[in-house]
Structures are given as structure tokens and as C-alpha cells.
Image 1 (spheres, rainbow, N blue to C red):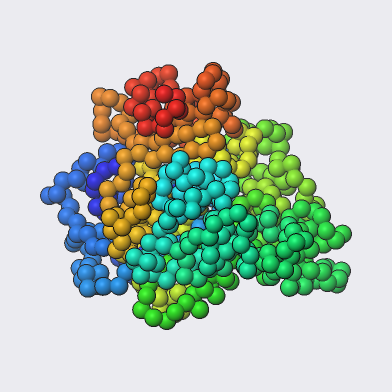
Image 2: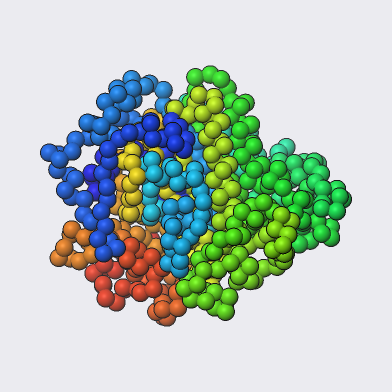
Length: 598
């Protein structure tokens, strides 16, 4: 990564993430950050060298603890930042299973236009910097969040599969460092996928999991909950009164009305919409409103935490863990109606080609057929009575648009209390979603839709309306938070490798899960020309072929499958360069963990 870019950035991180210092929302950004900015150029699908910006005679920079600004751009703000002594608040909005190209800024995909409408995300990208190549350290919920919480690489956390309780109790967390060293009031709510037996805030209220030691995750306050699927399960008979889960308890306490006037439990309606089981006709246009929707529940709990936090001078950190747009993607009647009149791009190389003609946009009904899931038929003459809908790319988009509105409302709450001006807001995804590309949905695979997530940064001193195409990792969010809080690396726990995005960026990023590992590094496109650079991704799948691979992928030959791709020039990985660029393979192979293709 080029040093001029590091100097110019306030902060940023990978994998599906938006990080911005907020002093307003939407149109307010214009009047607050009237900076001049650098622009990254592109040529032939690859990034141009930024070496011209390294000349100190061209530009000069001045850094501060919270930002790095062009010295000649914002003298008034520069003085304010210098005089500020209290570290900023940090609001971290984390989406579950959010792929990089559904960030509200990719109006075109490899298979056609993408009609997402996300004004909150759009305005933040316009007012700041957007990262198009942010990677998760592991594309599965619990492993990704363990890396973020511990500041450790995937191999070191102990959480190598989707089991939060595999966490090593000896590990500390960035939350604990923020609270105990940085002096922050730390909060979390929603589906955090972290170790259950936090002795202050266990995953299940009033209940400690058997055979698990108690630890302190580092939260001053918390409202933790299950994901979309686990909340449907009843607690075991021997601890029904103890195994309290806030969202399940909430659903059990609410009554909703079906279209025929029958009243049923909100949890019965939820289960009917998610699984098709439960009372007959329990999922209809009126029984599953936004008032009981899982993402709305998390938004409401976030505002509760903000309202009940101490009114002292402590800065706060809050992580808001939205359950969406994770599977099952079920949307309310109004959310379904909002996207039904749009055409959506089909997957890349779909398995069921009869439902996705090459190059043709798809209706929501075609998307549902492609997903292979049952859905309620829609009568166009009765559009106001559309029932909740399940799966399909159009509903994935509908949930993202809904979360966009919820995120905006949380920021508006901070604006109303006067706290927004000194708050760093982060929006990220824990990992991506394949959405049917190459006949595969879900995550846990090494392709770009699974391992890469959105990332935007906006705020004082951040280049405006810019796009950065180099690789970064969400593992470094923890280091960035600690740097903002003034916590020095000398205070980091043993094993932490997270680094701050405010300083020099790491030379390569890594990701892995199950039988594969990958490494991504920005390198010249030719040994003879360092002016043109791209990002090369080397993938090693051990003992069996890489799952969900494009049809053109070379066949697996024991004991491994070694693949090389130009991420910028070939984002859907149609052509492996492993045979034609052995020089790049050799340089990247040494960066893989021991035992993987070497």
C-alpha cells in the first residue's frame, strides 16, 4: 500500500465495512466536510501507481490522533482537533452476511444493473472514502467475530468452526482494553456470536452454560441475543425458566393479528414466516410487521443502551450486531412490495440456468424459483396484500435497504442528543454471501462474494468521494478502535496482531476456513513495470477441491488445489493465473500458513 494513501486516510477496514467520523447525516455532510481530496485513478481495470503523491513538494500532511488531514485544507477543523482532549465515541454497526458488491454503490454487477436504494450508505460514500476490497479473516460468523474481538489471526483464536464457545478463555478482547485501559463505557446488542459465559452478561440471561468457565468479554452493558434460526428453538425442559433470550422473550410477549382477524403469538407468526410451520396461514400480510422484525428489535435495543448509558464524561463504544441480511432472508409485506417492481441481476454461472437466462435481469418471482424455496404466490391485482416473502436476491436487497433505514435512525438518535459531532461510526459486514454464484449460496468459501465485504470511511480529514481498491482486513478494526481510544500497542495482549488503519497498513491480508487458506497482496502487474499494480489472490485448498468454484477452475489434483487470480481484472475468478505467473505464486505461497501448498 502506498504511503501517501496512509497519510491521507482517517481510518478504514475490511470485509463489509463502513467507518466514518460523523458530524451529521445525509445532506448535512456537505456543509461539515468541505475538503479537497485526492482521487485514485484506474487504467485498464487496474489501479494506477500513486507514487506521484509521495513527493513532499506536491502535498503536505498533518496527522492528529483521530485523523490525518491535508494541511492546507481545513485550518479551522485542524485547530479544533488539536485542542480536543477526549477520545471520540465509537459506534460500530455490524451486518451479518453482507457481500462487498451489495454496498449501495455498485450500480452494476457482472451480470447486470443492481437497483439497490440505500441513501444512508450512499451519502456516506459520497462524503468520504469507500473501500472496494475489504476482506474478512474468516467467512463464517463465529470465526470472523472471534478474530475481530481478539485482534488475532484466524488460526490463533481457537474458533475455527462456527462454535463461539471454542473461544480460548485465556484470550482478552479489544472491548476489555477499550474499557479498562481506554476508559470507555463499552456496550453491545444483537447477535454477537461471541463466547456465551460472560460472567456479567451471559448469552442467555440468568443462565451459565455448563462446563464453560466464566470470563469477562469487556462490556459495561449488553443486551445479547440469538440469531434468526436459534431464536425459534424452545429451551430445554430442565431450564425453561432460566434460558432467557431477549428476542424470543419479546416475541412470546407480543400478539399480532392475521388478515382474518385471528390473533396469534408473534413468535408463532415469526416461525410460520421463517419455516412455513406453525398455525395455518400464520404468515400473512399483517401478522409479520416491522414492529417484531429481528433487525428492528436490535435497533430498538441499541437506542435503549444509548439512553441508559451513564451521563458522565466517559466516551462510549457500542457494537450493534444486526441479524440481517443473514439467511433465512424473510421480509415483511411492505419490504417485499418495495422491491417487487424492480429487475435484479442473476447469479454468475447459475446452476438452474432455465430460471436465469444469460444476460437477462430477473423478476423477484424468477429469483424465488432459482432459490428453490417455497414462497407465497403474489396476485398483481392485490399488491397491497403481498405476504412476507422468503429468499431470492430481491429480498436480500430488501433487507439491506431496511437495515439502511435502521442505521440512519441510530445515527439520528446521536444527533438529537448532541453526541454525533464526537462520534466515530463504523458500518461493516462480518463476511459475505455467495447468492447463487456458481450454483452456491452461503459463505465459508474463498470466492470474492464470500470473503469480501463493503467498507466506507467518512469524516473530518477523510478524502471525499474517493474509492480505494487495495486490500485491507476487518481484523484491523480492533487496532483502529484502540488507536482512536489512545490505547498503545504496548498494552495489547499477547498474540494480538491487529494493527491500526490510522498508521502503516499491513503488506498482505489473509483469510481461511475449513480446508482452504488464501492470501491477497498488491503487486505490480509485470516484473518490468511497477507503475501498474493489481491485487493478486492465491488460494490453496487442501485434500479436496475448492467448494463453489467457477466452471473454468482447473481440476483438483492431490494433495491440493492452488489457484491465482487478478482480483481487480477478474473479480469473479474465471481465469486462474497459477500456470502463467509462477513468479507471483512463489512470492505469495510463502505467506500461506505452514502445511498449505508448501
